[in-house]
Amino acid sequence: MNGNGLSAAYGRVAVLMGGQSAEREVSLKSGRAVLDALLTRGIEAEAVDVDDDVLVRLAAGSYERAYIILHGRGGEDGVIQGALQRIGMPYTGSGVLGSALAMDKYRTKAVWRGVGIPTPESVLIVDEGDLDMAAALGFPLMVKPICEGSSIGMNKVENRTQLHRAWEQARVYDYLVLAERWIVGEEYTTSILQGEALPMIRLETPHLFYDYEAKYSADTTSYHCPCGLDAAQESDLQALCLKAFDAVGASGWGRVDLMLDEQRQPWLIEVNTVPGMTDHSLVPMAARVAGIEFDELVERVLATSLGRDGDE
Ligand SMILES: Nc1ncnc2c1ncn2[C@@H]1O[C@H](COP(=O)(O)OP(=O)(O)O)[C@@H](O)[C@H]1O
Ligand SMILES: [Mg+2]
Image (spheres, rainbow, N blue to C red):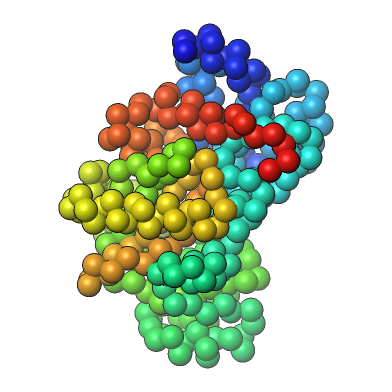
């Protein structure tokens, strides 16, 4: 199909971006890149910065579908997905259940454990009384709010005092906090597009972990794609990531973060149902190695909204 044909098939697209989460700025960046790519492909699209009036604005704008490029709470967690479903507007990516579950790192891990997917042992910290149980896992630990992204509110801790401080910092973002066994090893991410895994990326940073700065501003982060694993191990891990994505009910497109410990055993960390989409982001990087240029990737993500009948 040529650009015009596709444009007709998609109708007017609202690119939902911004929002009110801690990741607003990242979303605006991704959103603009997506909007540009759609326009380049001849698809009629407009930016919609999401606020409390978003549904009214969507109804008034006579859009046919929504391209969700919101990160974090309100946009990646099933809330906007449910609202769009209610007004019968097809949207990209995961549905309500997959979005909500993937947003919650604690419950994602519970589901994974239930189906035998390896994920680091962890303790949920609800109040101060749970800190002893977390410390009993053994240090170092990673402390994170269960529903945040972009490494916000996260800290590596080496002892009980640091654990207490990290818990206090994490609960600014979410009253539920996860203390997770620290994995020593290599970090990877697997991008998923329309039911298939793209080439894996290995991430390397001199920081303690892949923190906010390493993600968005440091020039010391390196990305290896192809990732350097042998083909058989890469395809086993891709299959594991697809299973992990599916297990939480995620669909369409997304990314699964994982680590390989020193014994080369995989540990799955989390699922992102609306990963970054600037032309420096990870999914576009993996797609490029698979021979899919940014504009095409953007359109293939849009295609995940086709066939949504609103009662999924
Ligand atoms: N259990 C762990 N052991 C070691 N490093 C971890 C662990 N969990 C997370 N990290 C590091 O922290 C980063 C962010 O963690 P992640 O759970 O993916 O949260 P976010 O949603 O913010 O990306 C990871 O990319 C990794 O570098
Ligand atoms: Mg992550």
